Image 1 (cartoon, rainbow, N blue to C red):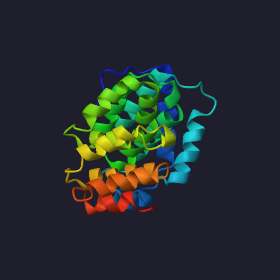
Image 2 (cartoon, rainbow, N blue to C red):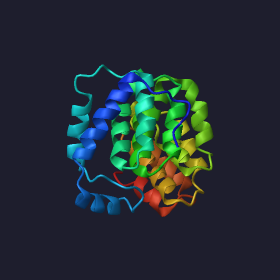
Image 3 (tube, rainbow, N blue to C red):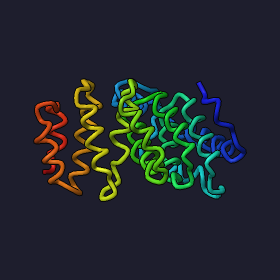
Image 4 (tube, rainbow, N blue to C red):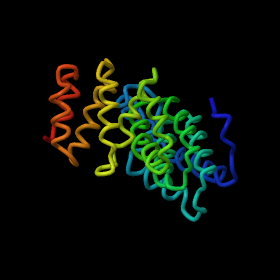
Length: 233
């Protein structure tokens, strides 16, 4: 189902025309079988390997105007409406490259993408490279992250945990640790993995703080979270 709040644009029409023609011509049904199996049969694939996807993606937008926010949102929701997973990868890449032109309003589209056809392959890219930059530039969105970490949808909670993944010294450590603590009792693998990953990444900036956090909460943390958090420490 398409997100009805996003309108199509002429540039989005041209990008989608080029994209579908290019990707369909490059489809490899035999490769699609193994790609689908690798992703646990969550989604159908065209069978286009990653390096070729990137080459084709560059060709699709070559010579076109730089997309504005409306173009990006239109392309994204239209890619999400198509069955093959490569289209969602294209949308994630486009949003990642042009996240700087997006206003705080794009968080609504990001939420739609995160909860629709969710799996780690798209959610993690959106979390770190779209939601993260949005929250960094628009601090008022922190309140939405505060809500997402407690949302029943685990992919929104995972996004809240991972949105500061690239912040390094700009990380709000108190927020990171607060979110990890809020999710410690969660039993899902993807949340436990995200706790460890977020802590491990921040550990590259402040290893002492991460060690202290793990020591203080180790009895409540899953073995997976602890292992991931301390992997490089």
